[in-house]
Image 1 (cartoon, rainbow, N blue to C red):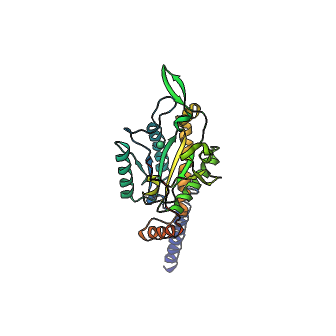
Image 2: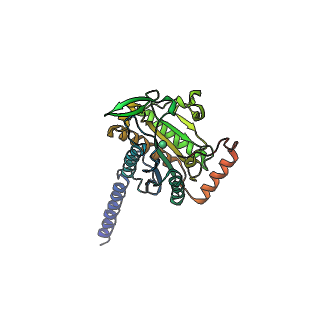
Image 3: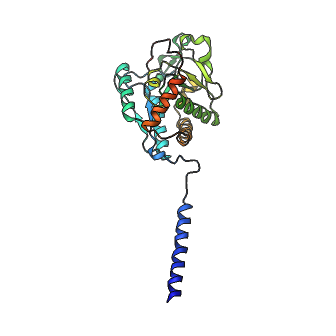
Amino acid sequence: MLWLRVMGLLVAAALACAAARAAYAEPQPADGCKRAAAFRVIIDVGHTEKAPGAISARGVPEFVFNLNLAKRIEEQLLAAGFQRSVLLITEGPARRGLAERVKRAKELAADLFLSIHHDSVPSRFLEKWEVEGEKRSFSDRFSGHSIFISQDSSDYAGSLLFARLLGGQLQERGLKYTPHYTDPIMGNRKRRLVDAHAGVYRYDQLIVLRTTGMPAVLLEAGSIINREEELRMGSVEHQALVSAAVTDAVEAFCTVRRPRTPANVANRADEVSRQATAPPAVAPEQR
Ligand SMILES: [Zn+2]
């Protein structure tokens, strides 16, 4: 019964082909990063409960805004397949919180470090108003987000790349960065704009950007001392918009970046040391 065996083989081959086609046709995320499951992002919640950063126009600590937005970002990253994402919450007074932040980030050996903050203004710009019988400070002078990187990062090229991707994604969603950090009026808080299109500034002395040993970016999501922008920063819709921008930027970064291996990390450090310029003129700053 040779013909029967031949028919059997032909049917088996046809079935195998169909199975292969079915496997091939399985839905894939259109622009998903193939190694998302192995890629680790640290979403650092700026400040601590005890040392909560700026105080908003209505008296809410910055730490609360940072925590809410960082949680949403983590949710969206997990939903997009970045299962190793870590929400980094630190405790205690500012200095101890900072040391712990850097130590934990290093231990996690991640591919990317993103610190979430909300902005205020130098105290000379503050005006007074009253909220529910309480005297509060505000300044409606500036609005918009800003992105910071440090040239002293062990991976400056990676930091700049992610910062640009993030700035581009925020811009695509109609969000505008604030240009006021280039204004001499900012005094010692004046920063150099390294990408005027994406809104990326250099802030070399910032400890979390210099010492975490990976591409590191700080996002000031908006000004909570601005009365209108504070309300926007508190809205779930706005948080979802920023989280989507972060997730798409992480996706793009993960797609173009080589995996973190000891050899790649050493090569990048070498690249950066060759590009290195003068050391920071001012003492390291905490955030
Ligand atoms: Zn802050």
